Image 1 (cartoon, helix red, strand yellow):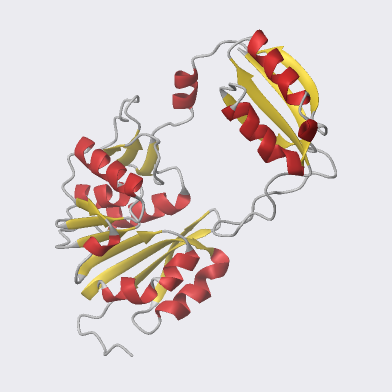
Image 2: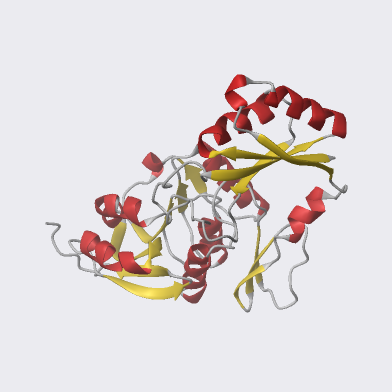
Amino acid sequence: MHELVLHANEALVEPVSDALMCELDALAVSVEDADTASETEQALFGEPGLAASRQAWPHSTLRALFADEDAATAAATLLLAQDWAAGVHVRSLQSVPEQDWVRLTQSQFAPVPITPTFWIVPTWHEAPAAARQVIRLDPGLAFGTGTHPTTRMCLRWIAGHAQSWPRVLDYGCGSGILAIGASLHGARNIDAVDIDPAAVEATRANALANRAVLNAGAPDQARDAYALVLANILAKPLVLLAPLLAMHVAPGGHLVLAGILDRQVSELREAYAPWLALDVHDSEEGWVLMVGHRSATPAAVP
């Protein structure tokens, strides 16, 4: 394989990337800040839930991977012949050692401990000897592999409060990892819902692989009240969904929310105050887990 390294300004990054992938047979294209490690280096992406400040860095390096040297040379020649690409410069064209990309990718995903006896384990790994409960889960299209703090905190809460919950709702289920975790810890009648059809399919496949019994579907599948409602999304959607999620918490039930940054705690408390009080139960790497409990004798909804 050969790598073609280009330099382009912000306005050219998207059209150059599109041309490389769609017309010039690049196998992959990556973009990075050309000013990395200099005084002019700058962050491009905002905090979770916020839009990026811009679509590319002012000075960007594009790395395009090609099957062989001829393909990389032809791509560079054709690209630089375009009038609109006058601001693109070739930095290098070099051979890339052959690697087992599948094995390399798999090596980045090791088993993840939730508790000493509860682990998330990719299918290509052996489960640790201490693991008594294991979720087999590989990286995929949907969010939730156990590597993010929000997912780990939710699963820790589930493991620490294991019981035969009569009904559970995983709202915004992603990969289905929380619903599966609840199933492993005694839950019954689990509904896992998401607006993304790919997430619903991933949840069904992961549940089958883990022998977890649940119902996965669109959000309108969520009906009536649940003893446990889980939602690992982001703070802004959680605020907007406050009336809906609170309505789904049965008397005596729990609401477990994640995807919340430290600085967003007050906003979440205020949003859910008409229905139940939220408290911070756990924190990790700037993220918090908030939990609310509905009284067994609920007050009238304002």
